[in-house]
Length: 267
Image (cartoon, rainbow, N blue to C red; front, side):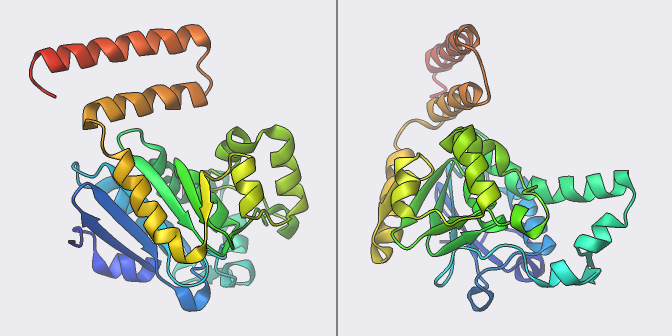
């Protein structure tokens, strides 16, 4: 296993570790003493990882060290105007519209690359996944969860909204009505419900989570890389609202690209 060429200081400030092992990359939220609470530096480091990911990586696993996946935003940002050189929530409110929009868009970019169809992404989730933690898990294509998982979209109850890209995949995973109830009530969603509603792929005992994720990743990278990427793009198009005619046209175009690539010996 090797450590990819990401600024180690940035990873430390963001509370992350990042490793590449062949076709698999692993991002670990590594502040277990703070239940892997996130800061803008976390999102900056995530964005840098997405921009610098080696081309041979076909699967990315996002996991949390310790007993929780992530307890959400570091609490300091709810009370301070500035923390670690970054504006807190009140500091963002004091920015101009354009400045605030650019700041939040930069935070979102740390999450949005996880849905790039060039690779498949898997969240390995145990314990609490609250707020920003829930949204980080939702940013991934798949979620494999431990039986002690507790998802919670806490933002609305705190007077703010989920703004890290979580609303779109949540609605697509569980449907509009259930997403409304989850967000507005702020209740906890456990493992059984997560699996039954499509929020999680499967649930396993906590001690078996790493092994289950390893097995899932091994299965997901068996297909030829270019065929897998084309298939992910097709599925992403449908998830994003392509109608049946558009989906059929996309399938035809993708298949033609694949046949021509295979005929040219490109794999």
